[in-house]
Image (cartoon, helix red, strand yellow):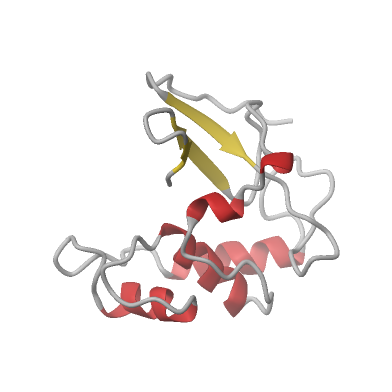
Amino acid sequence: MEEIQVKKTPGVRRLRTGVIPGKGWPHFPGLNSLATVPEQKALIELAQKELGVRERTGKNDGKRVEEYLQYVGFNKGTPWCAAFVSWVFGQAGYPQPRTAWSPALFPLSRQTQHISPAMVFGIYYSALKRIAH
């Protein structure tokens, strides 16, 4: 398995989650590296095509950002990190996730403090007492 280096940041724990098979989420057993299964490659390629997308004014806005938000039923001004993840999965044909709320991507039963390769990861902020990005 690949070693992942993580910089320690006071008050921040990095968490990753697997995905829940049978609930509309893709399931990739035995992840040793990313992009080894065709479905993984499709997700990564979709996300890579979005590299360079920026907010227009720094306030969760801009044409493409607003498209991600509209996909999950929100308008500009809403934080869009989880909306982007949802949009990518949606473009790949998955009905879930479909949320703008990043904590929803990480059900408590799937959280771990052990860093390992994953398709989606979250950052826990102790000041907020939740995943916030």
